[in-house]
Amino acid sequence: MIKKVAVLGGGGFIGNHLVAKLKSMQNYVVAVDLVRNEYSESAADEFHIKDLRDQNFVNEFFTTNTFDEVYQLAADMGGAGFIFTGDNDANIMHNSVQINLNVAEALKNSNTKIFYSSSACIYPEENQMDPQNPNCAEASAFPANPDSEYGWEKLFSERLYLSYARNYGLDVRIARFHNIYGPNGCYTGGREKAPAAICRKVAMAKDSDSIEVWGSGNQTRSFLYVDECIDGVLRLMESNHKQPVNIGSDEMVTINQLTEMVIAISGKNLTIKNIDGPVGVNGRCSDNQVISKVLNWKPDYPLKKGMIHLYNWVNSQV
Image 1 (tube, one colour):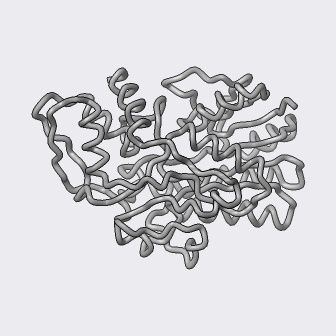
Image 2 (tube, one colour; image 1 turned 90 degrees about the vertical axis):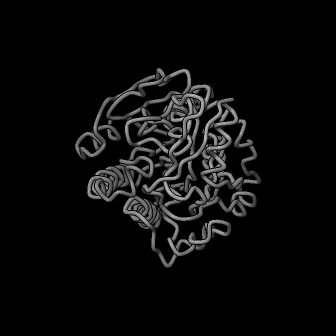
């Protein structure tokens, strides 16, 4: 059956990939964003350049259109250089909360199934102090203590959608994304995340240069290739699981190891220079026990394979 679906934030990195996947499945796709994706043409049947903070627009949009599914990915976000400086906290909180308030209110009492993209940033800071043993199990989210306002906003919006589910019957699915990466995303300008930033630095470097890495480089993360992220989202939407779940890889590396991987992919003779900079928590890795059980699935795409794709794309851009 052909579905009519909306992708909010459809011009963003993940949103643009999601639109393409949903179109390949023969759906009618309507995208909404402030701007189009600057690296790739949208596959959407309709693309509305609109501001989802505008309650009048959101109400009109969902009054004049009936959707089978809505994917809410729109948010004010970026990498460590955007989230952890503290300079953008008010905008992050206000803009993203306003979008989610508008969307939840407009869809209450509807028959539309909605997906909300949360983040691994919601997990308590104290559970991620040991870089080799972070605790990101879904049940560990409370007592809450995210390390950034971005994490607090995501946690609030999870509870917003879950309360609308309880009180108004909103049919919601929620995933906590763990560091999604891949081509056709931001790699410069301040909002880029670590994989793309490292690829850019390596691509632009000359032999014998040093690559600057924020922090000690011993902080750990797991990174999920965008195609697997979308696969997980679609599996979650087809399931009956209505509590937040992790969607991420459990292949954990240090940031220095990630940098060494990209240097090896490039074939260049480069060294790493660790410098002061915003880094977030010491360790974070997706705990996939719940999705393995409820979706009978977990990601298995090797990090190196994905980083080869990302490096080659970034290298072609710079």
